[in-house]
Amino acid sequence: MAVRRVAVLGAGSWGTAFAKVLADSGTDVVLWARRDEIADSITRERINTGYLPGVVLPDNLGATSDAGLALRGADAVVLAVPSQTLRANLSAWRPLLPSGATLVSLAKGVELGTLKRMSEVIGEVAGVPQSQVAVVSGPNLAKEIAAEQPTATVIACTDHDRAVDLQRACSNGYFRPYTNTDVVGCELGGACKNVIALACGMAAGLGFGDNTMASIITRGLAETARLGAALGADPLTFAGLAGLGDLVATCASPLSRNRSFGERLGRGETLAQAQEAAHGQVAEGVKSCSSIRELARRLDVEMPITDGVHGVCHDGLDPRALGAALIGRERKAERQ
Image (cartoon, rainbow, N blue to C red; front, side, top):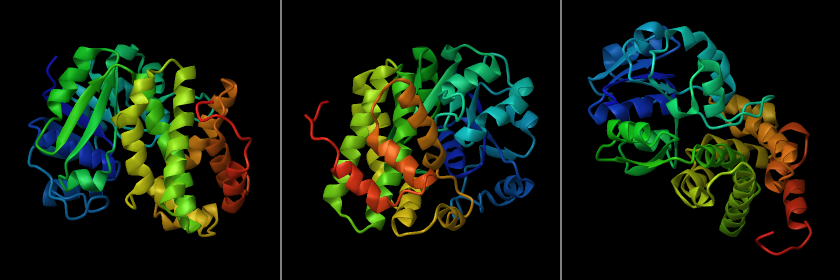
């Protein structure tokens, strides 16, 4: 089924940037914003002043605060809300979802309590098969994409034809999507990289350099791949855009909310101080580290960096102690 009209639910930085990608690819888009003033700003000025100031949005990108209006006649529905609020939001939208529409997740996380991936939450709440659910994951920093800097991403769906339809709907001169059928691997890469980026930020806040960063990124990828293996993911996914690509961008860029949040913690700020400095922007890894840690324990998978980030964020562990604990772990072969 060709994707001609898309509803994007969530007008934050990434939701707006992805809506722009779709519109620039020739797809008609309606962006739903929770606040009337954001929808009005986009309609009148063609700018989302709250999240992407200075970025002029295409004329074929509409905006509304009426979810029913946004969803009417959509071939695909993009869910661009934080991972821990996805269930509640989607429950409210379910009666409005067009029958047969592809449901696309931009959220990167593992749900607290249920330990479900976002595609699992969507399938459960919307009452649709997993073949109707797709995820987008990769090195996708919203501000760079909105500025039309070249990037690539992965569209993962167990139904390859649906993935191809979405690929066509969001391909343009600066955004190159690849398809993949390994939804599990793509989602885990996207969720775990936020946690590893927090650790990289802490290291930067403590004044450590590139050797430390490279070590955290590499060992973070190793523990992500271990979790993926336990859940049946394709190991090659973690060497691709949704694995290593997303991990490098999120761990290295000052545009990354998780990296910046971790850096504040490394400089000695409390969790509350770091959250206040983030001005309402969500650092997904702060909550996801708890659910990912619990999922790993349930599967008997060792994830020491994730354990340490959880300790700093939720148990009062000093970031310096985290570094010492990781360095002081039992010596072993690299692939163990």
